[in-house]
Picture 1 (cartoon, chains in turn orange, yellow):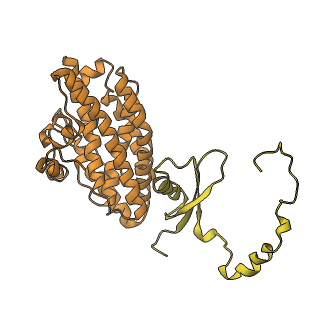
Picture 2 (spheres, one colour):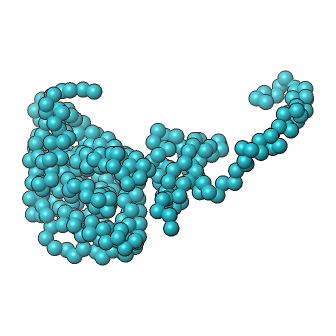
Picture 3 (cartoon, helix red, strand yellow):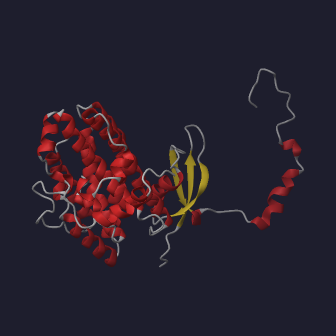
Length: 260
Length: 94
């Protein structure tokens, strides 16, 4: 029983980071710098949306085991308020310019692929299955965002300056990705979750290599937002999530159960 | 220097054994990006197993004005079609 409650919480953490980033990427639709990028970025968003649905569907089943009835994917997405969301603070940060979007994407993609690799070995067969399916998509996401960080970093004077600003500004949201709280630890011990703390070293190595190829200076480690168990995964969010959820949820809030 | 990305022609092979087929064009700053963009623009619905990209400017094309001298002489030479050979009944798919 307790196991199911922690598992539900953990699944929402996985689902929410995918969903919120998908929504952010969706904001680029029709505004991409070129047609091809518009389509590509939207594809990444749709991949993430698809992944979030798999996690939500499983979360609903786990919730049904606890309460007799579980929420649907739509109820999870549209009927929760900011404090109930369990996504990383990083993914709710606004799109900014294209360098800002790519810095956020790059930090997330590298982490996401490592996380899913870990989760594909989960002792929970369903978690392992979803992770194994998602990791192929995410590997490609990482190739794209890595490519853009290098191109813009090692590009013109202006693109370099913007890319440097973008990686600097988002650095303080990366610390949260490598923390483990009581919920994580309970599931790590059960062999279900992946130990985020162990992802820090490979993540830093990959990020350092890419930043160096992009001729960018690695941001210095300072205060990390959401550290100490007070982050997005615990329901503590930055000011940016509110307006974003309002945009995402208003239709279902105004016309509950509305269908296309 | 032009600020526009160059145009690339994209060829997709839909399954092993078939030839790459021209599917359209797109803009990209270089070959690597052209392949990535082609993946997102032209293979969203599971269309391909292989992508080729080439600069549109590298294609040499016949001129529409040369249509008559290039192609018309062949139209009166039906004997160039291999339709004058009796085929054994056992041979299929020809």
